[in-house]
Amino acid sequence: MQKLYRDHAIVLRTHPLGEADRIITLLTRRHGKVRAVAKGVRRTGSRFGARLEPFGLIDVQLHTGRNLHTVTQVVTIDTFAQQITADYGRFTAASAMLETTDRLTDEVVDPSQRGFLLLVGAMRTMAAGQFAAPLVLDSFLLRTLALSGWAPELRVCATCGAPGPHHAIDVRAGGLVCTPCRRPGATAVRQAAVEHMIFLLAGDWGNAVTADETVMLEAGRLIADTVTWNLERSVRSMSYVER
Image (cartoon, rainbow, N blue to C red; front, side):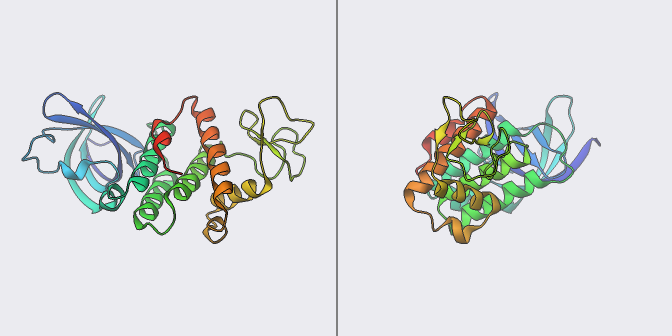
């Protein structure tokens, strides 16, 4: 990697370093996940402090370091943060998106750029407020799991491949399970909730928004369980999402 480079990025999280600096975790378009130091960013007169807050889509210039890169220039591309932080529901759901992305993404280059483009699209949709925040979150989580190779099987038995419909889901098995393959701990699921998850995974908003509240809640719980199982730990921000 060259010493000085530019890329588009979404700010995933930040935390203080010393008295005036901050470590910024970025999902970049062409360089994967990057951790960088923004020097002096916590001072009142910082040149780009507000541009390095979570949810922001930025054009950033970085200097390569051995362990941490250094932010040298930042230009704001889109201020999703203004619309997202103005609404508690959007803020908590978007925070869960960033935390999940941070947990699932390695510090490796993604040639397809799909993970970055998926997150940008989800942030833009969340900021627009056209759809309920939990729906946008659940759709994003399912698609992110699919990119990671962990999408739940929603059409056939995840164990034996028997065609559905099936009425139980086992996150340990990877999705729906038929009656002979059902193990203790599998969760009963209504077909309406399964179809709702299929719509969310496909981005079929026309059908997804027509589901009733109980179906959305059931699907959301199963999606959260699937994420937790595959990450082997809970996403802290998910507990604050208003459903």
